[in-house]
Image (cartoon, rainbow, N blue to C red; front, side, top):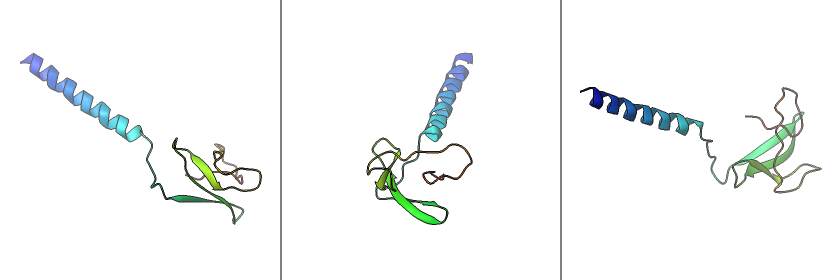
Length: 85
């Protein structure tokens, strides 16, 4: 009786762990989705999701190259290359 209870408990824990891991996986945007970046109300460039799951420039602003990863600023200051969530 106790063994079957613990087996069920182990199965439930395994399922719970799988669900938690699934929530932590990054979401995938459609392949044709394009992100538009702006600074001070003006468009500065566009990016797409790269093969590794990070944004890469498709039409980069001055100083960047096409296919280069888009830098992400983690602070609260507004910057031209900031990626908004």
